[in-house]
Image (tube, rainbow, N blue to C red; front, side):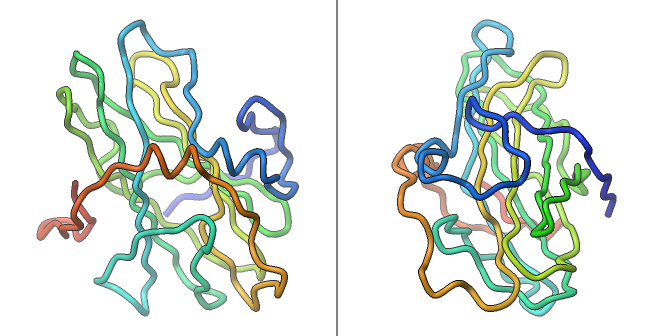
Length: 197
């Protein structure tokens, strides 16, 4: 597991965020197309699955409107699916930035299935893990890009809440996110333990 502190601001859904709360407007724009990709290269992100050591080997689909409530000082694992929906094959790469409750941002390196070739209609589940060592909400920014090209799609969402969740609940929204989720059955790979599309 590698975690690198970022001291730069991250572009999120057309506005700059420095770790402040996700606004309802951003929840409605969880997956955003990014215009840096080569012409004709298209991809999409989702669904997202999570687990932690007390729940292993089971995986659960992540609902960003009701993130899981794992215990403090646990190793959180995400499996993020991406799918090639273009007419050409390409090697996909996921960048994951985690914003911790204290506002610090870390670039998390993938531990499985990074930089894999996908033919049209195919995709991969890329594995990430990071420690939950603060109480509060953890948010992720995930960017799909072509290994030799630019960014294709980006999603921003809360992935976990450590400690007691606020009684006022979570922001409502996410229509764009719900419309872009892939409908797949959850199958666990025997070789890696990650869910597979």
